[in-house]
Image (cartoon, rainbow, N blue to C red):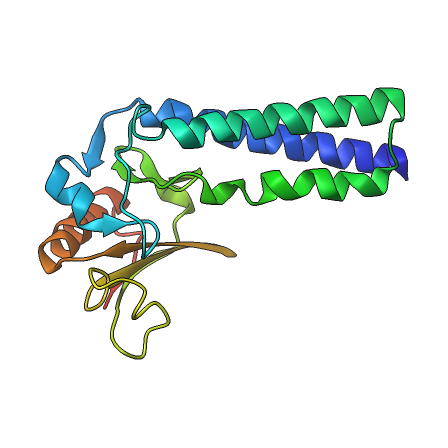
Length: 192
């Protein structure tokens, strides 16, 4: 059982490292959206937090913390696998910090080949649908922030997974809707 858990945990570490490196590489590419401060101010990844610019300097704390987490988890895995310092059941405790690392990046950007959302890069062909959901009094995020109220939640569905962002102005919603229509080549269903 320990060998199976070692292999599974090693695959998980490789997967998270690959996703992290992919986000870092894609952050260097030219962005289609947001292109100016007005765009950055009118979109949020989390309803109560201001979006950070999609650059290395803007995401510096998230990059640093994510790197430290990956190094910590990798070192603990190596110590546990080669020196039998702890039982395989403790791998789950080591896995917890990295499992919640998706919340570190406060990032949203549209690129030529996909979307950067949080700690993941979503290629256009993986996106099944996009939907702008109005945030009104019946919406679950209503009341989190005055800027989000009367805005829109952009829900991007990719098979079993979804990711959300918040658009705070009608102009940005229309601009983003046009960009998504152009780059998705008709594969993305945009709905209100």
